[in-house]
Image (cartoon, rainbow, N blue to C red):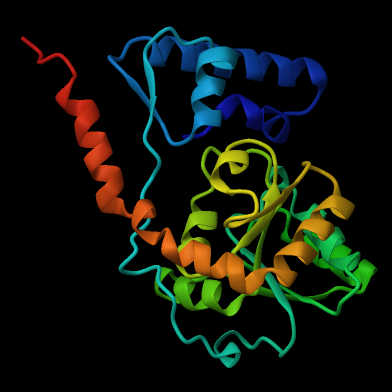
Length: 259
């Protein structure tokens, strides 16, 4: 669920050290995963990464993580709850890590032709840089800090668009949580988000690291928001935890019984 080698550049300094950390991490993953009966990955892209990049010979099967659709559902969400202004609203919640490339989302919002407020829930080491970048670009941004789980459905439902610029997701569960609340996603066509976001159905995608293209995806999501939201809500059952558990049970049922 986490491609640990991809984080090497954020944990070490210098090209040689990064290469060494990456090689060690990949070698460990390969050894560990080759000593199990089956590897479960949350998306097709992650499964491909495990097979082709990590080089695992063990069977890899895809079982997406489920969303608690009893919790993540459309709710009435007054903006005052989060001290958010009226008008178009793009948001994100999650770790503010440099690997998430949230600066691309800030720059994309800055490039929109409409006045938009950017609401960022969560926290992390990139927050200070993001605050400075938003100020430099004149983006109206609200940094909400860590949001409790019980606050998340209201936060998602408040947004017009959930912005997701991270290229390192193994599934992008928050995108599915947003969809379950009726909020479409504008994200990147990279990593697992290429599978998680159904183009033209639950949102739109753009190439990773391209603020202009992401701005276009956000703008298109704004324009088609009502239709996209209806599709998101119609597909809630396929996102449920029950559905994921049933699929995982099938994996366990076909495993050899230890002697």
